Length: 447
Image (cartoon, rainbow, N blue to C red):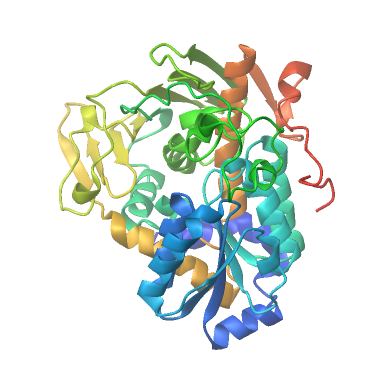
């Protein structure tokens, strides 16, 4: 199977539901096809500012808006874009103003997870294509609503899962699909590395320049606290789901690509906060088992292990292999004949036979796949094609993380109901499928 055929086949499921998207071309997409693509960026702290600068480097893109409820971020990030492009973007405390600009083609979203769904849905309703960071959503229900919005309004929604644009990961999947490992019955996912404590922080007045009501958005109102704000929000259930869904979702997406199934049959989890003594709610030590037809997937996480590491950025684009036993972000694929170590973000892959001898390998390069993922989004704005990290594909991968977290929080073995994407005869688990929203920041039943 050549590369073109492989990509066509892996996109077939999404293409069926995408339907008229590839045939449809909105007026703003037609403009993009003939001229520069105009983008607004929603969320500037961390990943959002990185994406803004990466897209700004493209000669065919204009970054017209930067939006964030923390106006203290505006000056530095606006200067950074101006340095790249020679033009200063408009800075908005309320992102909805850029949705009113009919010339804007797309929204790049680097917000906390609890804003991904509502931000994406509002952008689609305004006719804007969306690049939204992983994971897709804060919870199961709103992730499906994002898919519904993308299809209803015929918008391109690309999720920031760069491995979907990685040549070496695509080649690994091709190698597996060709049967070179035999029958696969076990996939093991690691997400382990050392991170620092967030400590304890007291509640205090909202800083000047911060619209805290908007920052909280769909999340419950609570007093301002630095640990419930920039970055540390990852470790609280109100905004995210810990490192399984923050960083582990990259490996989980690769693993589900390997498994090639939408839903597991069951999920069971164990773990806890064994190491850190601080404000966090999500586990620092976490294990999850998902049972699929004919195979099992296992996730393991230790956020206190100094010997397990991500590959440093400066090593991700060299022609070499990781020291696999100490690579903390790997996927292991066990077949009846051979096994594979498969890395993310430029880590490459290696296959070993029954005697432990390496028989196939492919080094990876991270920078090209990162650039290609952004290029793919811009290309799809013009072509109306399905993007590599399409919202529906990443919806199913994010579901695995949600299932794992809900199994952890309930302490139960959960049976998955594919019809509802929730759980069979389990009111406690189903209560965590959706959150209670806070007016006016409500994800609607009908998108």
